[in-house]
Length: 134
Image (cartoon, rainbow, N blue to C red; front, side):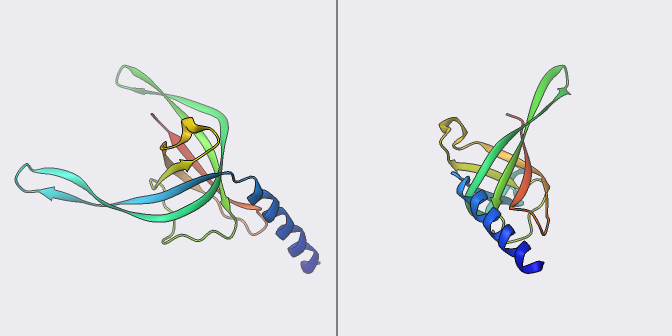
């Protein structure tokens, strides 16, 4: 049975990867650096954890939240990476995913915050939940 399952999963993963028409990078901000002259913290240099194909799909669960008296809408998306994708380090909540190319040019350059990283041995892609609060 394992041989059949491996064949089915392999075919599913290959088919899913063909749908990954976008590309993205995932980065992690470096430790903040203190400017002793101004006492301001500036973000440290970012480390690239992943660069490659992806697929972005909208999750139909936008959240409204209040920021003071202002209403902010948070949009959630599911991002699929190739199942066998590797990263320079284990992904963490708060890492930044940036769309670098897409058939929907409105997405290019959009930075999204990683909110969840899903794992599964029978998945056809490596799925991440990301949020856009812009």
